[in-house]
Length: 139
Image (cartoon, rainbow, N blue to C red; front, side):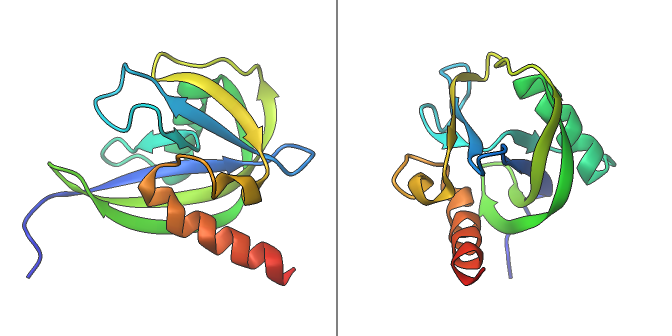
């Protein structure tokens, strides 16, 4: 039987620009964990919050960008000290706003998916990245 940790939902946007590069953000020392790791923008949902509403909120807070969500990129599950997290990543494209970083991040870059495998990315993103790269090879 699994432990009795609560389950929390998190969402991230795999945001592609016109050149098909995705936006990644580097976690700053303002975070409690994973400082220096790169990840797609997003975060935990508030209780009762809709996936897309929560992701729009997180995108605005972390990047100042607006986006259109175009489909499921993938999902993963991981453990944190206080909760099990279900991470859902949606494919997206920017539709407005101006890129600016919140205090949670200290750098950004637009990177081809293939290059991300060589970056210090957040561990829960790795299976989703692998799935995206496999789908890309098939198309």
